[in-house]
Image (cartoon, rainbow, N blue to C red; front, top):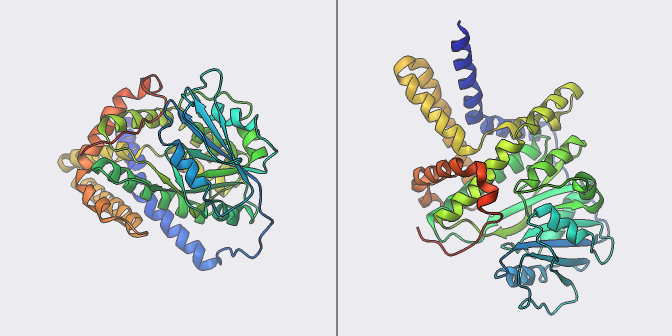
Length: 390
């Protein structure tokens, strides 16, 4: 076998592995459940004190709604810090002593910068902090459900970001993507003994651990959650997945909005995917399952990239290797099966199923995003939410 043929085969195996990995992960999850009883919540500590950080950049329109939802929490010990970066706050007034509006003197234009701006102005040393986006709404039991996992000894917990809006095909497809990742990168990955991936909001940490992980860094542009999850797992921490700790997230509803958002996300993958080699390598050397499995997940390309590559390999092999083409067809079929399972695993709005016919259009827009990924952080700093059309 020549070097070229070895490279061709290796490349196909690497891409093809991503098609079957979700179902392999699910099989591992259920095997572990058979031989190991799931954890039971058998104790409750006193109500922990939370600093709730809400970050906004340029836009304040949605802030009253998110703060109102937080003030309806079935919880007492918390304080809300609204960091309004580069915002006009003259119209922001909240009739509650649990809310502090912070307006940085200089533009920060950084998630972690806004977080530490709030942390450095905490009214008291909050034991835990949770991060909420300005377009989120919070379920009344959100903090209680986070506590279910903190009370088991976890120091980092990721909740679920459910769709707040399903007003366009793009919003529905964005919600379908989230369900896929919640199921495999949240429930399955954590249940298999590794860590849930972080989603940027709807997540919580002990304050000291968050400061330890990111306090010495100056992270510009998108992707602070990628750095944070690496720092957590590198330190031997597991990120718990809390399926009932729910925030409702505004989904991208317009094509230009989608392109800018995905360009930032693609940019962060190319920037930080190398963390996967470090974690997987450390996991192998140390015999650390959490690090090894999480490192493999970090190496996985964005969904649309390995799907397009898989289709290309299948098409090429139709002409050069019918056996390989059949293998690719089986792999793609297994991936589709796994995707449908992720949607069927929870209550999924019929509009999401109907939107699946728009996947080719959705993938095309992400290809457009790929061409803009190199200058993504110059195009936009944060997602601007506007009413879109299909």
